[in-house]
Length: 124
Image (cartoon, rainbow, N blue to C red):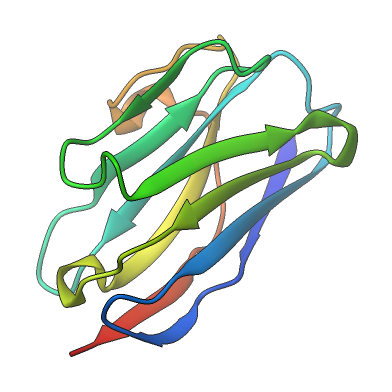
């Protein structure tokens, strides 16, 4: 079992930046890919970004490409999501998730473990 805990959310003005962290604990957090998803009020949860275990494969949703950067520090069992040029449309609860098969995919059901989420609010 892997436990994931997100942090770093908060309130920021449009154009600002935030860095989210996803810390893993429990079962050894090895050979798993990690993804970030988000759910805005009244909308379905959507894929944001994902990174493979060694960072060789990374994929972004078109809506965040060029603004968000996913990275990981396996020594710290932590995955990050650097979010720049934030827009009110980015307001959502952000979740991290882990895939035991180390697949970099956008499909939510492919992910085995989920965190509880962290709120990001971007004001205009």
